[in-house]
Length: 98
Length: 161
Image (tube, rainbow over all chains, first blue to last red; front, side):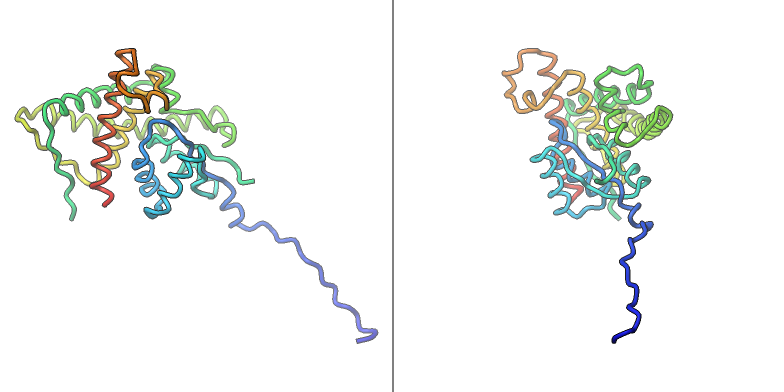
C-alpha cells in the first residue's frame, strides 16, 4: 500500500538459552590397546545408557578412528561422564564443543 | 529377582584372582604419588586437564574423588578375598551378585591396565604371539592380561544378554 509505513522487521539474533549451554561440552573416548571391545560396549551401556547398537557404533569409531565423541552435555554432566568413564579405565577427555 | 552369577573356579584361577585382588587392594589404598609412575598416569590420568580448564586445585579434588571410588571398590575386593581364601574345596563355587558385576569388571580391568602400563605393553605386544616376547616378566604380564580378558569376556556375555 503506497504511503503506508513499512513494518520494521529485523532478524533478532537468538539469545543463548540454557539448552545452548547444556550441550557445550564434548566427552571424547580415545582408543587404547588394552581395553576389550566388549568391555567398552558394556561401559558405554552402563554409564551413558546407550543401546547395544549405539554402544557398538561408538566403540567401533574409537577402534577405527582413534576416538569418538560419546556425548555433548553441560559442563557438569560432561565432567560426571568423564569421571565415570575414566574410573572404568577408558581414556576420556572433555573439551568445549566447537 | 536376578541373584547373580555362579562361578566355578579351579585352583589355578583362584590363585590368580587372589594374586590380582591382593595387588589391587594394596595399590588402591596407596597414595597415588607412591604408585609406579605409569600406573599412576593410567589410573589417575592428567590427560585432558588443560582442555577441561582444570586448575591444580580442581585436579587435586578430582584425584581425591577417584581415590574415594577406588577406596569403596577396595573394600569390596577385600571382602571377596576373604571368601576366596577361606574356602578350600575344589572346584570352588562363588556367586557374584548382579549389582557387583560392574565393580568386578572394573577391578579386573584396572589390573590389566596397570600391568600393561607397568610393563610397557602396547598394541604390538597385545597382538604378538607368546614366543615373540623375549622378556619373561613381560610375557607373564601379557599372559595374565589375556587370561583376565577371557574371564571378563565370559562375564560380559552372561551379564549383558
